[in-house]
Image (tube, rainbow over all chains, first blue to last red; front, top):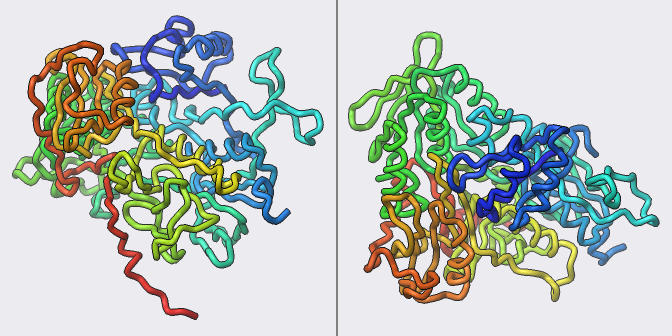
Length: 69
Length: 482
């Protein structure tokens, strides 16, 4: 599973950092960093983070598979 | 069925953010015809912003930034489609994105009369409607023999990022970054965070000056210096030097100085991928492919086409908030929103088509701060610090043009962005009154000139180009009939 954060919307409420600290981090006051590829054992936490985001900026989903048609 | 916009053949050229979001939107809007997405790179759509941040910091590998697809519409039992994986256990199964991905093949031409896309492998793809989303590429160092030195890189693609991350991890003695736009500044920031000595050379007066204007760009200068970047502004790199085995060893500057470095990143801005359209008859030039507010491409006579649409970095479109000047934006958010509008209009009859009127927004994370912009800061004559302070590197700068608000830039105050966006959308008077920022008095009492430079004098291109109403050179070409 992959994630992308719409950083146009993100206002650094940091709910995701509390819920999935191994995936999201906030090294400055507002500058969010995240791991785009979600490890399997973090998936449930990432779904919780996506649901909790006050501005709904986190999208979780499959990437287009390389052999896709 | 002819005339049914939800059927037929749609081809999207460009398999990045805009191409993917357009493909999804077409299916969400009920398009059931054949959908083909052509991409020059062999990789499925991936996200670029992490390439200059997480990837260079070693937090994520370059090949892990694949873009997630949006959940498709819920599966309907009467649709003969393969079941996709449920997004989460217990949620209804969603339709997978039904598209033919032609990855690793470049489009080489467009035949408007024959309604065909020509591909580098000799194949051609017929279409009923076409979306052009070919984006941009990194502007290379202008002297090919110097650009070919080992250790001279650019950063645009996932493969570029993998190479650069490997080089940074190997611990170069010094990195030279040419160009202090957003990409160059983010690379310099990553180098410093990794403890690497870095020199940044910029022809303009300050980093980010092309996007923020000279007044606010002083803050960017302060950020570079405070983080130990060897910042050289007002200079041009005249030559890249290499040793006998073709390895980069350093550069000569226009002020006579020499930089010794073993890694060079050329961050001179972007070039629009329009060459494949040169003989197409579309209004395609250095600023991109011109289109109307509904994303329909103009031909070289300025006549709008019916079946050719444009979205993302390669487009150039009129915006009413900025005197209907044609904007070329290199923004993540614009790629998404314009792709959605284009896709909507491709499958919607004319009276229900939508205009692309979104106010431009971009962001950059560098040196530990979050810089966000709404509106077009370079469409301004004055700027005022409305909240916060330069010293704390936490502020809102508001830009005005002839007495109305046209842009705002926040530094570590992103929550205010929406407020100023509304002021821009309603053409609120500039400078903003004390009440405008929720009762906060203005920090600077008088507006200052925003000091917007001529982009020609910069190493980095602007990420927003105001390209005016002037036609591209293509409009001077008249082809004889027959």
